[in-house]
Figure 1 (cartoon, rainbow, N blue to C red):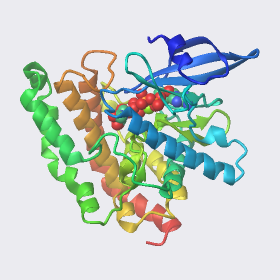
Figure 2 (figure 1 turned 90 degrees about the horizontal axis):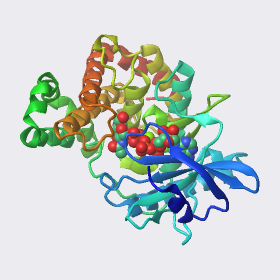
Figure 3 (figure 1 turned 30 degrees about the horizontal axis):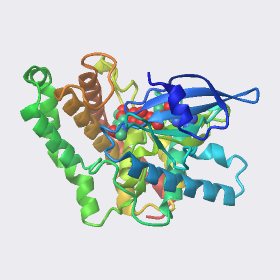
Figure 4 (figure 1 turned 120 degrees about the vertical axis):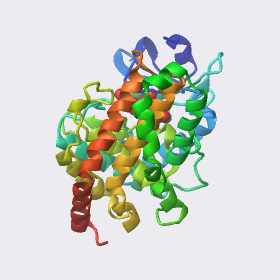
Amino acid sequence: MHDLKRVARLFDMRADLVHAHPYGSGHINDTYCAWYDQAGQRIRYIHQRINHDIFKDPVALMANVDRVTRHALKRLTESGHPEARRRTLTTIPSIDGKPYAIDSEGNCWRTYPFIERARGYDEIEDNRQAEEAARAFGEFQKLAADLPGKRLVETIPDFHHTPRRLSALEDALRSGDAERRAAAGPEIEFALAREGDAHRVVDAIEAGRVPERVTHNDTKLNNVLLDDVTMEGVCVIDLDTTMPGSVLYDFGDMVRTACPTTREDEVDLSKIDIRLDRFESLLRGYLSSASEFLVPAEIELLAFSGKLLTYECGIRFLTDFLLGDVYFKTKRPGQNLDRCRSQFALVKAIESKLAQMEDMVAECAGNTVAI
Ligand code: ADP
Ligand code: GN1
Ligand code: MG
């Protein structure tokens, strides 16, 4: 737990800190919910320490976030949206007017208003939630599409370059712990056997068939907050990886997190399957906002992207397990290996239903766009 009183003093808060506590279930940053008193009214904010072991240039990252959120707010206010500031993250400036503040230990902090009456779901409860979340991510991509100015900075280079993720696994096999390597034998074999899949999307991007766009790149379902009452997707959060990418990375990660029958670290692999009804809801929601800008090559790869991103995430958990759990936060020993196993079980489930998923894409896209 950091000293939040000191953090609060770095920002232009206009209210007094009452109490702060760790918040959320993110794997990367240190997030705190902080209650403030403003002339007798209690309001809360999010203070977040950016993990600078993972994001090497937090200042450049915050320049991205600042550009994207200002652009979103401009569009929302221009359209007369009555709750524009609930529909996008907005940064509270530091006392010297920056969208972030650096503390005396060199940590980079940011502060967001707390988005009230909404929450993110680690496990989706029904199809409506999946549809609304996917629609919100599609809207986010649409909004980012006309972001003015230069290309956004790549906050983590090659973030979704699956072949390079596989190379990183091969490096970890050489340098990682021998005992852990022995424990993960079948998973290592599984990962290496699917090398061909790893290339499919990056090859399509390199060939110019799939365009580079500004994408979110971390569309885990708990990175969109859904309204407590209407279930509408109100605000896309966790913008650290918003940068040049492919819509396939975004849609694929939605499939990975919305469609399985279990949690990301489920240990009973017999319970893991992919829900096709949920996949259909995701598709419907996503295409309702994204169909107007998607090109045929992107649509053709939508179902496959679910398999790819699940495979890639499994590789990343496995690599981290071999390297001693240095990247993803863990709550128990072996959690990254459990996460890897569940991702690979999901890959298998997707493989067995991929043809059906592809038919669903063709049908749903045929109803919404002319391809
Ligand atoms: P991480 O990169 O570690 O996943 P996130 O930015 O996703 O960090 O934040 C962690 C959690 O904090 C989110 O899953 C969400 O529950 C909550 N959260 C983050 N920002 C806000 C906000 N502005 N309003 C309400 N909740 C938020
Ligand atoms: C991390 O930050 P969070 O918890 O939303 C990770 C994603 C992974 C996800 C797996 C910057 O997401 O890429 O898919 O864990 N974020 C980063 O749960 O690496
Ligand atoms: Mg998150």
